[in-house]
Length: 390
Image (cartoon, rainbow, N blue to C red; front, side, top):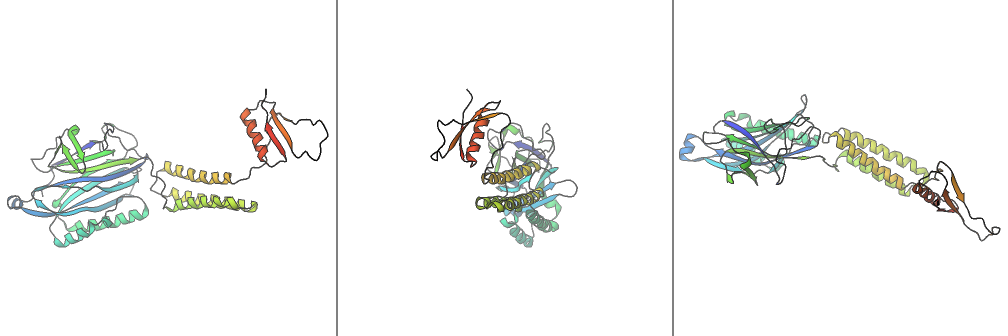
């Protein structure tokens, strides 16, 4: 398998009508997902294979490194394909698999690498066949359990390739840097961008690296130039960005928020002496959920704040909906409480006294009307109505 003679990176929008310029993904702005859309491998073979034919067992492996400050890097590696191919040949490998799934853009970079390796050891081939199962193809995520699984699989993949001659490995990588501010020409400066990131490889003198980007197109899992498939080895990544991840209903903190909301529902049937304890318990659960969310690396800070506020407001609304209105405090300033003067002395037949509220000071009409409605609902043994000023 020949060594690389060069690699060039191109960019294309991943949706029709998308912006003509790549949209750079900035730090702390949201979440990144990456699909390995497709891989094509050009197997040139050895001299004997080129002249007499033959085959190779090849494996496609991916590695994604979430590059954080210090030594807090996280790595996910997986075997994405394992198959037998004729040599010489051009092999389009339709992968279409998530390799990064809604990872917060808080790291310094996200490096993506694809390797194609020829395997000649039958025993190693059996191991690779096992690692090629869906159970071992986990995308990079930052949940503690997912990180643990990814590290385990990455260790297995690394161990499997320990005995492989490095000269047999053909690889292409894209070090997507996540920066605080946008720059000009982010693709050529290796900044992480939305859309298709295309790595085209030159393996021999017959291969070209000089493609007009406007004439390149991605169709399904393949790459075309002027509508015709190219023969180069290439890798196509589809990078997407989401400003919000959404609430993880299976997380511990989310269950705490749900418990707080359910506790607030108990106010519906609570007696007056039970209310204070129920409200206190609901807010304790909110605090516990907030502390757990603060430690969840799957979320950027802005969304953590939004999720906490939403949970708090839900509980507050339920408390307010199940609170009996207290007698309203009087409005500041003069108000006239005018009652009609009876033409005769009251008798036992008069069961209700109706009082009209008439503003005499600088009060807003809607404010006084609302005050009258509160008085009417307060349980006082009077009837109230609102009489606007002439």
